[in-house]
Length: 352
Image 1 (tube, rainbow, N blue to C red):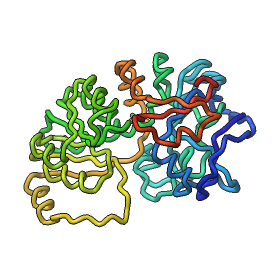
Image 2: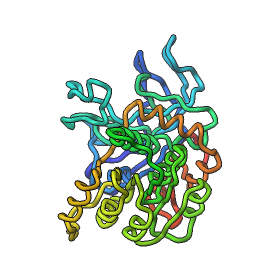
Image 3: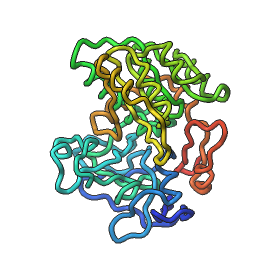
Image 4: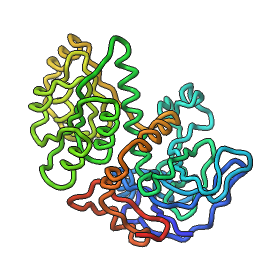
């Protein structure tokens, strides 16, 4: 079968390779790969900046944003041939920490987890793949074109879940949310905010292209202004930060409403010093009972919440997020950013 592979730590090693067909174990699904989302983590691995091959191997099958259709399932299980599924990314380590042992592998304390397509486990970037039934999630059949958005949706499902849990330490009825960044994570965060009935605002740098229209179609408001000015004017109750840009992070922290919650989902680049009035930030957080938290990855609860959110979403809006589909044979093209790209997807089933 064909698979998208890379030698972690070696930039320029990305290739479509012939690899042996997988053999499903007793409790595993055999899945026909349909599509694979490409994100920043995949590009970092392709550049040689990140990633670990499986033990004893040089090459890693890339890809963690999966979508596939079940070809074979264990008898008497919860899955059947033809089911549309995605595979969970992270696995707890063999000797799990307390969080992993309780199914909260997204909160691993010791860092010895593994991840499909990222860390020591082959990913989902192949025409066939297997996955343990316990780490597969069924999707609504109507999501055959857009279910590849599932994994990034799990990231923001977790972010909103974390916000809710933190907020409920006292009376909590947020009305206005600001999402910074209108990439796939930001737009999906906005979708879930609208589904929660909030007045959602999205901030990004661009003034044209597909992003403003996508935000408007959600019923949200788009801004392409200075982050500090927008945050000060809106005074949001909740901020989902999806840029990882240091100045934006501190601008939104300083401008929320009292009892404001800022959830950071964007990973910042290191080595860029930034002048910050730390005393002012600290004073505002303390006097307003503010909270800043980081959120990464997702567990099975978040996958199921994401599946529900996508099932309820407007299908044409989800389809508009996927601005480019590239066949596996031309996979390298998916790693070159286009000016108007929102989400780029590799097609694994031979359809471009």
